[in-house]
Image (cartoon, rainbow, N blue to C red; front, side):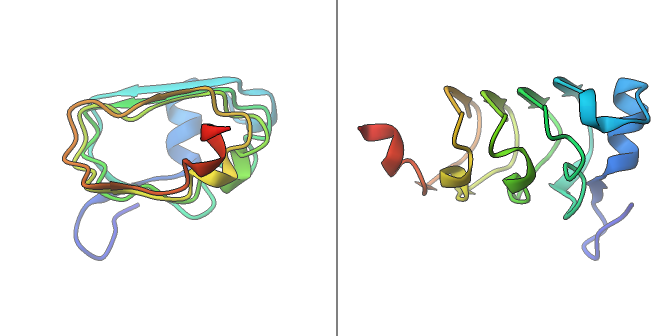
Amino acid sequence: MVAQDGSSVFTSTTITETTGEAEHEQIQEIEVIFGTFGRIGGNALDKCKNLQKLTMVNCNLEVISNLEPVGASLVHLCLSNQNITRMSGLSSLRQLRHLYLQQNRISRIEGLERFCD
């Protein structure tokens, strides 16, 4: 799928192509290295209820959103070497323990308050 700005969008079809699994409910890990996605699509992760680890490196992501569907399961999130300038929505990731954001130009991270307990 292509966004209005011409960049590709990470979708549920991308997940099927990446993992080889048509049924996303049992997927626990997704790893994408060297993709061309501007963002994660609105319903891309809807069926990934058991996803524990999401790794996307060098995928040209600019916007991080739509992670809510994996909020109850995601433990490890790696979004290194992207084009991210702002992070938000992390508060919905209730199980998150490992967050990797190296090689981005992030000026603001929102939603980390609950991790400071």
